[in-house]
Length: 147
Picture 1 (cartoon, rainbow, N blue to C red):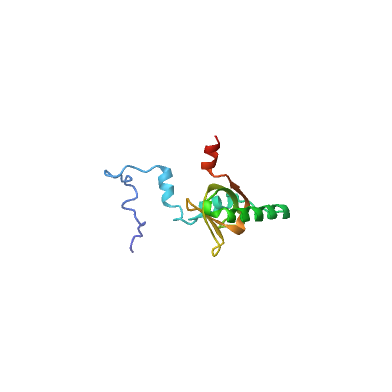
Picture 2: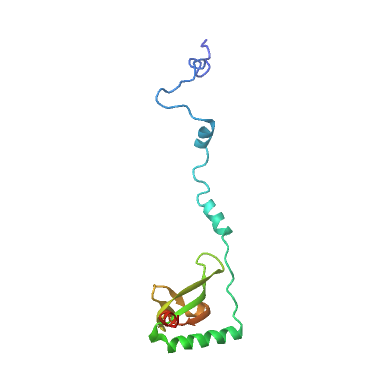
């Protein structure tokens, strides 16, 4: 009759091998080997995105709309002077509901009627329908002469 042998009986009592070239890993490093491979890739980014705050689009009163129309007409009259403006506009968020209010100052390059944008010399393009406030300011050269 054949004697049954326990599997690995010949090595079960030997000491655990230790590499001469690789230092031993900490328990933390060993545990990390067995964690799921990127099971939640992008989860941290999604949490950050959800936590990012946006503002609601401001509702303009009739008075504010009329004031804005007057400012745009004034700008059209002075467009050849390339006046300085202070423009507050709403930039919709591309990823979620809402957006943010942006305030920009600069010299107007032109009013693009086809794209319906206010184009500033520095390259900023402001959609006219998103403007909440527009102040046409005195030219800086005029201000310096007055001083």
